Length: 256
Image (cartoon, rainbow, N blue to C red; front, side, top):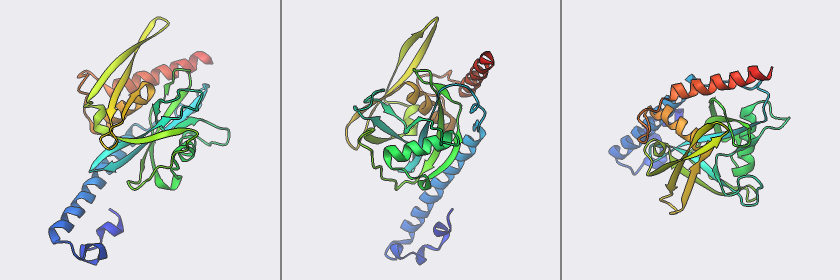
């Protein structure tokens, strides 16, 4: 807990007219949120790949998976790509983009892109870990960078890149209201894409979260909530992570 939250409630001017029960409830909520965040950090650091795949000779990009607390639960922040963009216009995604020569690593790429797209300043971000990367449909190796952002963050979308910003409870990806899969054939292999349909209760807008964005959201939800998704009792996140890592390292050896 922060020093501020540890101070006596009766030393806080904003609580002068609150009952003792209300103050205790407020402190209890803050403690619970802190506990949830600390547990999330512990789990994510266990799965941090650090720079294990940074040397791979593929076109690279990074996305930021921004976690924040809302109503006592973890949520993920998503964006909707502008229709002005040449690639994937109108798609739901995480803030992110291709690496630039000035970026030191995948973390800097994700933070730079998030600031450009939604006005998220690096000072508002607590980096936690890099999870195992995956290939996008155009063959780019995309690294998911997980971070916790302040609950008070107000997005300022760049209209040239983003048309909308919304939150989804992390739990939705293990217990979705609407979920289906789309089979994609690639040479001799058939790949299944996850698709989540989410209706924002605040705006009543319906968003389709699919493809690599859905893959990263699902993996993160299973890791942090320690639950198998309701649509697949056999989902083994550790096996999936191990399989992806072996595949990536195998591809790298074949390039040598």
